[in-house]
Image (cartoon, rainbow, N blue to C red; front, side, top):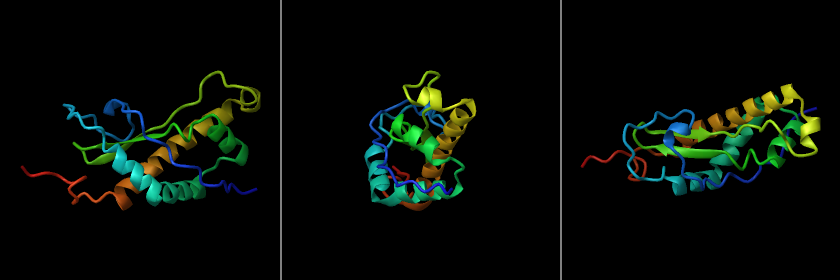
Length: 150
């Protein structure tokens, strides 16, 4: 059986978080007050970065359809978040983890191994999206994402 889910909608990126909470981001020594270029990242996701990354992730994922459906229904896909770290010039991601207690029917249907697989796979999805954004969509020479020389 092959894993071939439909591409879900990209996450909303509406929660400004502490940059130190994100994986793959160097925590800045000082906060600049900016919001991580969330609108631009959300536009990149909507314009194709999300689909590109999701399909790449699916090709390398070991989840099965039921595990993916659980992650989707439990809001893990929608809860992914991304942050542009201006200081380091990278995109960090924040991947949710499954709670110890899950709502029915998932609490009975997912054993410990399934839960660990889902958590690991959603983390890998976050990393894949982060890398696609950094390597294919963000133009570091642009005014919005580049460095200013004032």
